[in-house]
Length: 149
Image (cartoon, rainbow, N blue to C red; front, side, top):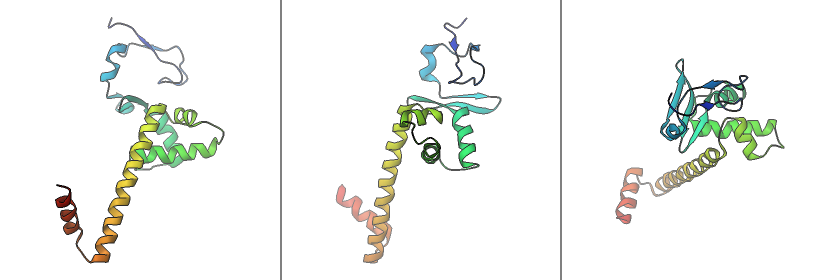
């Protein structure tokens, strides 16, 4: 009807239902998919160019972390470390798959978290400098911004 039918496998979206065929979308339109909900539950979402298996990710998140209201990235990092502790011989690629993340998405999460850590460290150093020099953070930021322009 709409073109090729995507065959879902056990590792993708239909756990325990290998062979289930669902006319979801033609493959050429997959790059346009941002999110898929089933009965009001987010089962797939886009992270950059990757689709995240929400069923697997949320299931592992609940099992290892319980009700954790953190961000997707911070939850992914904590969950990855917990699963790594349970499966110490697994590779990073295998661990990412265990929590429903394509390996490329896992690498992007690490990049984002590293950048966020650098920003937090910079802010912390600025605040320490402000305390030492007894300057308000707003004045310090204005000086920095004026120097860069």
